[in-house]
Length: 95
Image 1 (cartoon, helix red, strand yellow):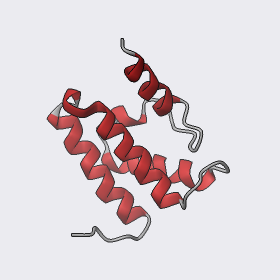
Image 2 (cartoon, helix red, strand yellow):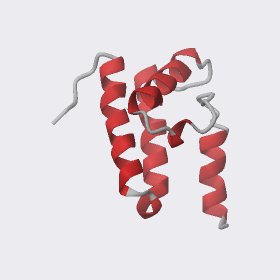
Image 3 (spheres, helix red, strand yellow):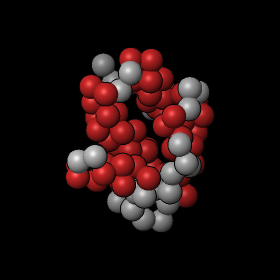
Image 4 (tube, rainbow, N blue to C red):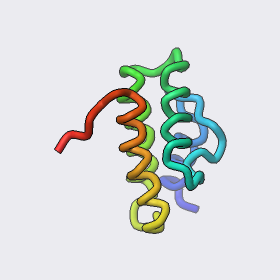
């Protein structure tokens, strides 16, 4: 395993900003992922941005770090989780 893979896994597992539910990004339920990220962001005392931005940033970070290694099925679930996260925070998708 390369240092960069270890680094990104470490961030995902032990974020300084959010206390993430274990294995949340492995769920097949986009609503569950969004709800967990929302809960984590709202309860965090260490985040630097508003809860919505912190939660969306963590989700984008996970998707981007997985890159080409992310199976299409998993990517679809995570992209759907973005929409669910927007809905959970009362935000509309920007076109």
